Amino acid sequence: MVGSDENNPSVIRPANVQGGLPAGGGGMKAMTGVGQNRRALSNINRNIIGGGPPYPCAVNKRVLSEKNVLCNKNPPIPVHRPITRQFAAQIANKQRLNPEETKKSVQLESSPAYSDDCTIIDADDYKMSTEFPAPMFVQHTEAMLEEIDRMDEVEMEDVDEDAIVDIDSGDKNNALAVFEYIDDLHSYYKKAEGTSCVPPNYMEQQFDINERMRGILIDWLIEVHYKFELMDETLCLMVNLIDRFLAVQPIVRKKLQLVGVTAMLLACKYEEVSVPVVEDLILISDKAYSRKEVLEMERLMVNTLQFNMSVPTPYVFMRRFLKAAQSDKKLELLSFFIIELCLVEYEMLKFPPSLLAAAAVYTAQCAISRFREWSKTCEFHSTYSEEQLLECSRMMVTFHQKAATGKLTGVHRKYSTSKYGYAARAEPASFLLEGRL
Image 1: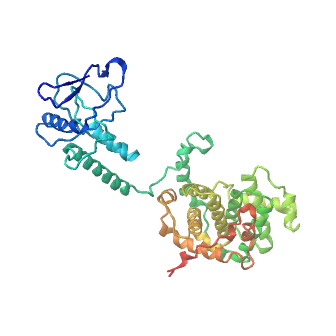
Image 2: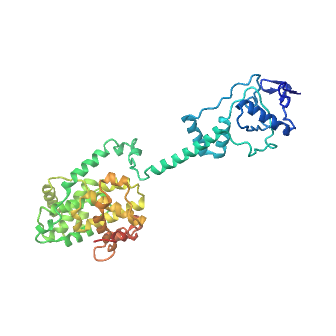
Image 3: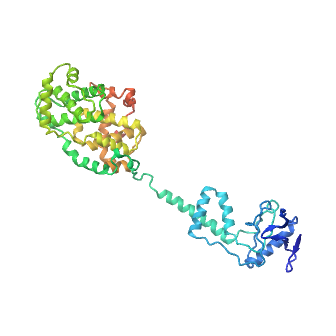
């Protein structure tokens, strides 16, 4: 049943509607005379808005519920939803997820609320015309959304992609990682590393040995270390014990190998779980020394060094800096390959252990990525900038280039095996040498 308005006979109203639902339980159908509804709708909009530009509101006739059909007697003043900060944020979030749905929701949420009257128009039959411009508040909302997008783009540009990363956040529940003390430990290591360093020219005090003999000894000990399958900590401590002992104790050349074997024995006792027996060390030295001589040299070394074995070596810094670099196995192996090349070279004693470790990680990163790479996280945890590492890094590149040549090739052979990922085959970061003075 259809009735007409007394004041405006053109307006068509649905009859027998109770509580916004059709009477009799049947589905309410739209008027077939859509062409007549257009004029009536424009009149309604003009009366409600107050003479403003009319705009049509199409409702799909297939979906009909209390939410989209409300018929009351007295038309209230239209209520526009205010565009608050919270509303703007909601719209922005919706637009990022589904731009099409956002446009629909903006028009729906921003449109005036009609609570007394409604006219159902088939959306398929009715099309928007250019003579009905969008309401002003819809235009403002769209402009606001565009401004929000521009602000988000500017904010994303301002975000520093190379921000300092908290590398210890994942270790809060790991008791072995000593999360609460890790920063204090490495601060102490940095302060105490000076006690583990030796004068870079200490060989001048030796009357029967020189730096080349030292290089031959350490290159041989690296191979022995590999055969015994010892830990990296043991190797770094062994070299440190040798240098610290030779810096204060003159040694004849025929006892130099004995110093190296004894330093390995002491380092194993300090670091390893399973320590090689003295007879094994005598055997690898081709029985050049007796058990008594090894034990006597051991006593001499620990007394000369005043039993000070707890010194920060490049190893403790390497582990920290590799973590800061978020390293994978390839970067780790290449970094240790470079640091072991430096253990053989006497001229690298002028650099402290922390600088050696940082430069090794930096050089390895450059070799893998083929460009200079040193993040703010690495700089923060190592306390070294890229400029401070360049001198040491360039020397490491030259060692890498000639690692397979000459007589001291023990490190290269070790890292040319599958166990060490063929790290020695990596291309050196030769571009770091360009522009070198």
